[in-house]
Amino acid sequence: MKSPRKTKYNKLLALNKKLGENFSAIDHPGMQYLAKLFGSAGEDSFEEIKKQEPSVTRSQIAAGLEQGIRDLSMMLPAQEPEIRSAALSAFRDALKAEYPEFLERDKQRLAKVLGRGHIRTENEWYLLQSRLDEIEGDPEYEEETKRLWDLMDNYSS
Image (cartoon, rainbow, N blue to C red):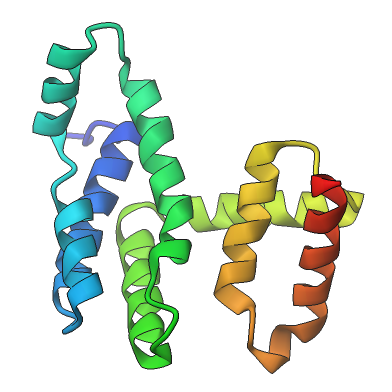
């Protein structure tokens, strides 16, 4: 029997749970906080939100969860490179396990923006910011970092 197709919403819930598990294995107070934050997102959270705001939909929740994933790189503790490295590794592991097309889709979207040479939307700006958070400070990506900053500065002005 064929298993049912997982929706974006279900993938994001599974991803959040996996992030909670992965982050809990990193011995750092900030990572323990993120483990609780991401690990607590689940179907019961949706039911609680529905009680507070009956008009909210799963797709709206999915959009919020997805933005939380994008904002994650800004939450990682940048002051300690070894912790940030472990956190990024845990993040990538969770994505590969639960929502691998997220990375591929972002890679394609990033290539479109870079090919076009300008940012059209706020979501694209956040996509570039997320990539910048991932690579900034690494000499191997110095040229890409400069290009991302230029695009983001042009969009802001």
